[in-house]
Image (cartoon, rainbow, N blue to C red; front, side, top):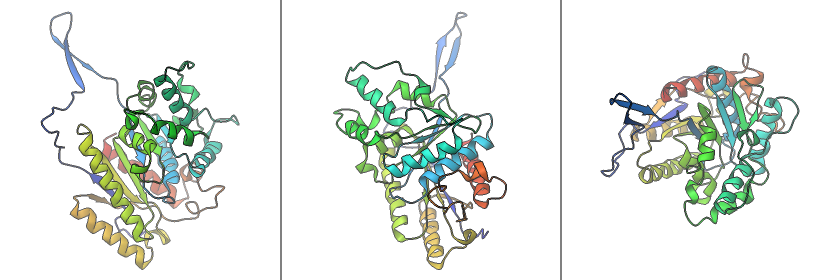
Length: 335
């Protein structure tokens, strides 16, 4: 594999964000114990939540989400991992459903998905009676130890429309939900497959991005459009940073599909060089990881979403690279 082309970019904002004079919220607080001494009480651990996002379809978001989720679970057996599908389009829902058929324990259908969870939250806001909120109604176990999946569900599109009709807090429905936060915080790492649209056009995508502290951007370096879409997403995240002054996004970008083991065509090489120059000008950390375009990544629709690290972990070049990407992310995120 040609290591001269940086295939994995880490867009980390090293500088502390300007909070406009507002002090950051402390994660610890001190209270006096029975002895009169100050006793520091820690909040419950918070899951690391990562959105796999790009404002363009066909950039292997679902493939990357499933593979990195499985790779993370394999690399970190002591951690619990959750994969969430938040794309209401049939492609993504079917994609993670295909992953589900490979990963779910037994032949039983998956639990209710994100659509039912969001419907529950919306009904609660409208004071409609709902049954008790139970995590197992929305999350399905998998054959991979400590890895669970939440599918999108068939009605996520209509539920998304209801979210857009909220007068207040429509972008923070998930972030402000104690039920949702308690569910995801039972895991150490959460990876969310998202829609291939602009955040300006999707209230659901904005909800996901507002919940996440990490953004992973897969990119197929084939056209100039893919690069412009990545820059568009970066600008969107910068706007979010300004709005959420107490959150520091750690954003990573990697080339999810490169022909011929990373060599690629002349056009791809030039595009990679352009991305590299842009990264350096933007103070972006460049890493050297690549996902080769082997037969598993570009397989037929019946198996394209099957996680390669699950069924060919030893012989697939793509599987080895997904495992390494998960390792790199764990080191960057200090998990």
